[in-house]
Length: 190
Length: 162
Image 1: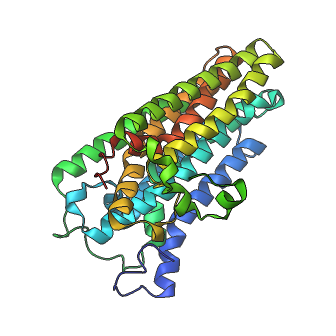
Image 2: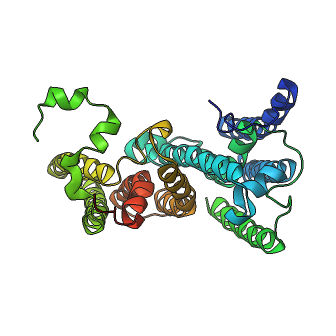
């Protein structure tokens, strides 16, 4: 059962829902394709940092701007959401939590347990791909899950007033910028 | 009231989590002790695992494996102490329980990301001993896996007297 099936809201058409779901899926698929190209050497190592960081940043921006209603929904204060929105967001975070912990462990544990991974010629590229992939997931996963699962027509604003406070937007913009900055620094060091 | 293992396995998860035999875990002080025990156990197990890699010593690995039953006991007790809020299916919880559980995953999202990223940074980008790297990843995994349940056990108010 979908998280919002129990509410009396008009569902979007299959086409609308499919198009909405295609957005985050495309962003993740594009990143996976670029990462695969970097790891296999199709994209030369010199361009790896730019290609990976650029794709991750574009993916984050595409999801945050393209799905701004869901992005704001995922990050805004509880008192700006109605009961249905709070419930849907909480479920999205619950699913995201499991995925991100599993992804983090799968990214970082195998090289520690299987020494041969560290000696692969493309080790640095695998590492960079993992770091930027983790960043992309950490920044967008709750938004993507909300966009994927939301059964209501994804139009209009969020919350009782349909608006989000300026303070919330400024706070999350600063957090996002800091996160991207730290991520790029880590990726650059890798 | 004692039950055989067969009778216990025949119970639903909801029945097990609400069983009176776990009443001793449900006061706030015990819940907090269980959370501290879990955190200590996680850090201890991670240290032992890291030592087994650094020293290439199978005894440490054996000690790590020997700690796992303790994990099962502490995790099981803590789950029962919050009446299985993070274990039981949503339809088996009441509205208040669902709200508390759901809010906790969102609350733990950023702390979990910080813990995972820090461990990942140590594991992937520093040149410290491999044992320290492995210990950091294992500790982060244990801590984040259990963070929402631990946070619930720490923060839930005392249950009313029956």
